[in-house]
Image 1 (cartoon, rainbow, N blue to C red):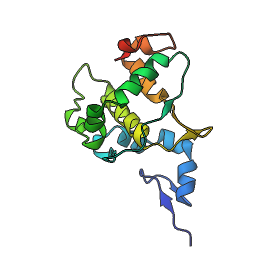
Image 2 (tube, rainbow, N blue to C red):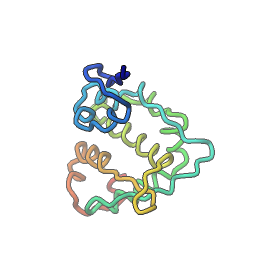
Image 3 (cartoon, rainbow, N blue to C red):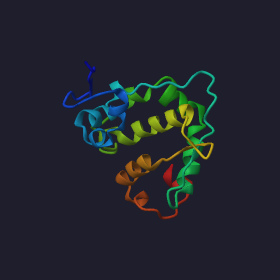
Length: 159
């Protein structure tokens, strides 16, 4: 008998972990996966005390050099890496009732996940470590329409 591997929603089961990972259709639409993606209690990653990574390129998505340079600078600010990744203090400061906050604190959580990917990533394209910041860019564009499209901006406008 084959052991079934359930999704966290328990509405669907798979024949294996690999099969569950390949099912992008359900994963992208599963309400429980979406809920947990922005629930601070389910966010848990850590940058080692002596990280060996951090040298990750950011994929240019249209006219996003300004964003990539700002994100690179922020990702190499030790205090931010400490706050968002090592100590995860940002979770204590999330405030979804603040009218200035993004929906479900999406930008803060996505930025924390971005830092995690920058320091713990193994994604390689043509032998180089790269990361596509499209999800973070969309969230920023949702909160501030200035960054919705692919217009040219200055890094300081984003920060």
